[in-house]
Every structure is written in C-alpha cells, then in structure tokens.
Length: 462
Image (cartoon, rainbow, N blue to C red; front, side, top):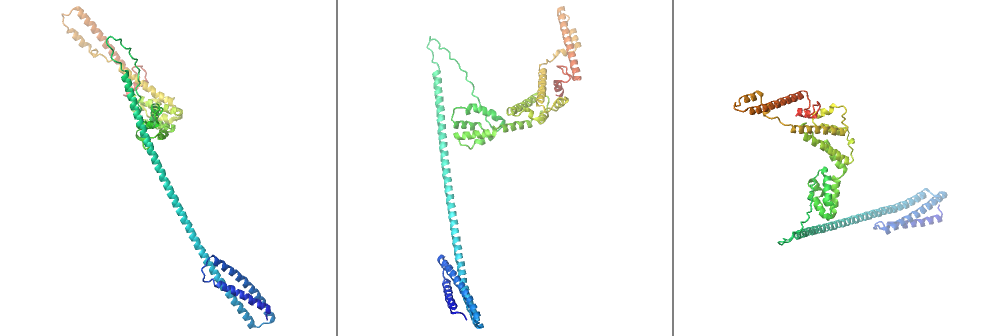
C-alpha cells in the first residue's frame, strides 16, 4: 500500500491541478483581449507545472503499491484516477489552444485594420501631394502667362518708343533739310558759294532666306552687317529677322514670341540648322552628285555654266576644309558624265588623262569651252562676200558691150578698169571657196588649219 505522505501530497497536488483547470475553464466564454490572453497563458503555465508534479508523485505511488503487493482492483482504480486527471488537463489545454487561436485572429484582424488605415493614410497623402503639385503647376503656369503678358506689353511699348523715335528722327531730318535750303538772294547781292555735294551710297538690300542651305552664308553675312551688328535693341533685330525669313526657315521661329531672349534662341536654332559645316558640306556634295548633263556640244553657254558651277562647289568645299584631292574618281567620273558624249570621247583619246585628277578634268572642260568661244567670235567677225562679186564675167561683158557708143574714151577706160578689179575680186573669192572646201574635206580648222581643233569639231557637230 502507499505511504500516507505520498498520498496526501498527491491529493494536495491534484487540488492545485483542479483549481487551475477551473481557472482556465472560466475564460472559455470570455472575449479575448491582451489581459485575458496573459491570464490564460499564466494559468496554462501553472497547470502544466502542477500536472507534472502530480505525475511524478503518481509514479512514486505506483512503485509503492507494487512493493506493497496491491491488488489488481487497486491498480485499476489508480490508473482510472490518473486517466481522469489527464483528460481534465487535456480539456483545459484545448481551451487554452482555442483561446490562443482566437487571440491570434484578433491580432491579425487588428493588423489588417492597421495596414488598411496605413494604406488609406498613404493614399490620402498621395492625393494631397498630387493636389499640391497640380496647384503649384497651375500657379507656375499662371505666373508664366503673366510674365509673357508683361513681356508682350513691354515689347509693344518698346516698339511704340522705336516708332516714335523714328518719327522724331524723320521730323528732325526734315527740319535740317528745310534749314539747309538757301534763301533767295537779293538783287545785286553776291552769289553764295556752292555747297559741296556728298555721295550717298544706295541702301543694300538683303535677299530673304527661305530654306536653301547654300544661300545661308550670303544671307548671314548681309544680315550680320546690316542688322545683327547694329546698335538697335534685340527685339527690333528679331522683328527684322522674321521679315527676312521665308518658307521652312520662317517656321523655325514662327512660334517664338518677339522678345530679347527669344532673339538669341532664334539665332541659335538657325545656325544649328543651316550654318553647321557638316550641313554645308552635305549640300555642296549633293549638288555635285545631281549635276545636270549638257547634251548639245554647240551650247557653249551651258558648258560654261556647268563648268563654273562645278568649280564654285569645289571651291566652297575647300573653304570648308574638304580638299579636292579627297573626292577621288567618283566626282571626276560624274563630271565627265555631265558633258556631251563627243567631249567624253575626246577626253578618252589621251592616255594621260586621269579621272582621279579633278584639276585635269576641270582644265580639260575649260579649254574646250574657251576654244568654242573663240570659234564663235571668229564666225561673228568674218565679213560676208559682196553680192555683185558673184556675177558671171560673161554677163558683165555683155553689159559692157551694150554701153552706148557715144560715151567718151575716158569713160570707157574707167569702166574697163572697174570691171578688171571686179573680176580680180571674184577670182579671189572663188579661190577662198576652194580653200574652204579643201579644209572641210581634209577635216582641218578654217582658222588655224589644225586637224584636232575643238572649233572645227563644234562646227561639224553643229
């Protein structure tokens, strides 16, 4: 049998276990919060401690019963008592577990509410920030519009001042001219010395600039000398600039307000679009790539115009830093393709002609143009033969025989002398015609008798 001490200790320990079980059970239907959760956890800890001590004491009692030779009924009663206590403790711990889960759900719900509140606060702050940004943007736009209005008013006021100053200058000029007119001199008074006349140069006209890049340099030089470097205000310069721009160039500055600051912006835009060396080089190269060919070899004006055009583009490229030796054979071939076919054939006759030598190609075209011009001048200065020199000699003899017999001997001698001179001139003309016919058959030039003269070839091809 068990000792009284162990049995009394176990009864006391079972009472503690029962008390903490009851303590936990009283929270079964209580709404969970942080205080209740802490109380339940404390009760669970105490219950586990008491139950562990209860089990150790029960193990000692079981050993005592075994030593004392307890009966089977006593062992069974001991086991049933321990099982009952274990079930009661398990039920209490289940309540604790459920309460923990309830508290966790409450915490999760609270966390979700807190996160939602944080998100709502963030959205509200974002909305407030956006409203503030929109308000600031609106304020900035209003300020910009107000400043633009002030600038426009200032520009209009400046224009009025300029027009008033110009009007005042004109009035002063008229007064000076009127004052310079000499008064009528009194009769007998000595004449006033003549005033020295001054030569007034004509005002230089600036050609409007449209969009041709090749015209930018000439436009800028004229505008720079006449307007840009003058002492007038920048806003007035901008007004002149807009007047001188047409087409695509005008679109670049069309929407810029007439202000001093925008004048610098407009000049920067125009120089970037039309004044860059790369843009000018590309424009000159494109012109050389699109040369219009000359088909008629007798059209010396077209040949000269083509030759001067090519030379001008090459010179312009040299001023931009592109050496003519860098063009290679492509440019030489394109230039030769732009001249008549017969001149191309003449170029190909000489083995020393190199298409890569741009200077040699240009010199060849220049020589052919000069030879064609000399031939044109020679044709223009050649006198035409007299009409009466082509009269046959027999006709002149018949006219002479039909003269009246009453003429004097002196008259007949004079007429015979004149007839002889006319016959001599007719013979000379006939000899010239034979020479011309011979030169044509032998393909020689009438001026220099050379067989390979460009003037002869132009005369034959025309």
